[in-house]
Amino acid sequence: MDDCLIKYSHVCVKQDGVPVLEDVNVEFSKGQYIYIVGKVGTGKSSFLKTIYGELEIDEGEADVLGFDMRKIRPRRLPALRRRLGIVFQDFQLLTDRTVDDNLMFVLRATGWRNKREAKARIDEVLDQVGMANKGYKMPNELSGGEQQRVVIARAILNNPDILIADEPTGNLDAETADSIVSLLHGISDSGTLVIMTTHNLSLIDKFPGTTYVCKNHKLDLDK
Image (cartoon, rainbow, N blue to C red; front, side, top):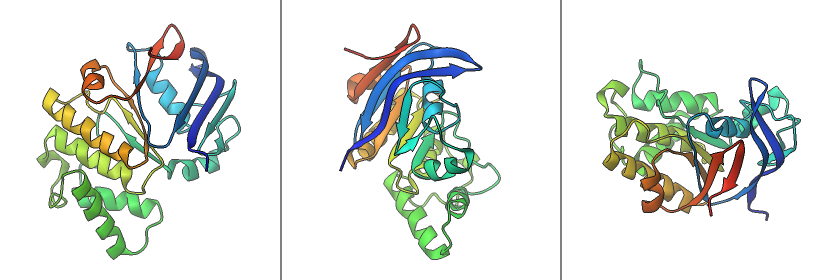
């Protein structure tokens, strides 16, 4: 079985019609940990958005989990996104409900019908991210690091093939950032492709991966 999950050939990434990355050629596989670094405005987040269909691709060839991202129709995007997990810098938790209810909301939206099985899965992922027995808490009762752990739990509920983390440590102190990246590395070790943007180059030294740099409209392997 081919382990390649993402393959881009001569892709041009545009934001508001303006090219931000040109001639992107990458292949990412199961279990890889990919860092994408670069200054603000160099195209890191725009590149991630092409993976989950937030930005269209109109030049080159782009395959994500067998979906042709040049031709994918809007009605097919939910099927793609069910196989992806996304972790944002600003958490985006629903503030009017508990941690358990935040996660239950996602499971119901993705087709889980058996409440007992759903609750068991929630308990499983909260334990995996070090948040066991915190399901009853409201988001505002949690620290930033705890909220980000819940966001990661939410992202892995459906055992995604690819986990996308856009500056997941941007709002966290150094010690908490280390714990979050260590957690993400553990998820990668289990076979999930993890793609993470970051400004924090010290994390790359502590938790090695394959690093790409966005610079001068290019996305190149850091050698």
